Image (cartoon, rainbow, N blue to C red):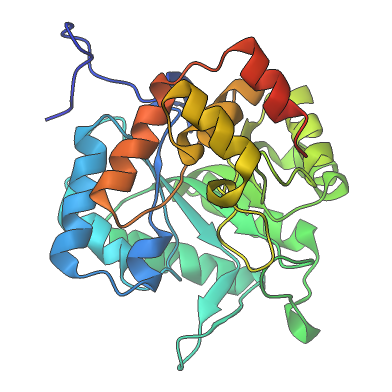
Length: 297
């Protein structure tokens, strides 16, 4: 059962409402990557997915290359509640050793969508991101994996026309690539971005211009080595202490306030951290705190 707002019969909408894949969703969703890459036990994975949906989350971000995450999602949530958006990513795969490798060719993208439909037990994916691998962070496409983006978008557009996916998103793209891809109908962009690392601001500016949803990955800065982490930044720690919040909540609340089409899919395998992330949607940052946070990067 979905939680309701205190003193109200209205279902809770963490972070407030937004539009994605033709549906109204909560701006705070859940990213399933850790469920596949951190050897989370099955019962714990099912419990945290159910906790998320029970708290009002109706946007789950996943990928076939997240190991068993899609199986966990199916076991925990299928048959899927009305209004739940399943967002998938294509462009990478795991090899026999479990290492992440590029899978950028159009047929590979189609195969990944088909695999996710099967493992999720879904007839349709609400949104599919094309994860480009042209630049860090993460693996880089080489050799025959360096594929023209137009060929990739043509394949995803065909899958959309077939009804297998709803909307198309992009991940790991430059502003030039996003502008080039706009005629294909881009619903969301998922790039590395946070209060302490705003190198993708040109891509965000273009997303703002065209009303495209902005879904920052690793929004707390913890996903890659040598990247700043909000939990260890003394300036954010001080602001959080003044507000009676955690540094993670402050960083997530800043993202929600920075652009009204930002959607958060912070992932965690911890029930306590999930509750903390969802509660960030209730944190209102005073003007002085916003000014201080705006000046950090």
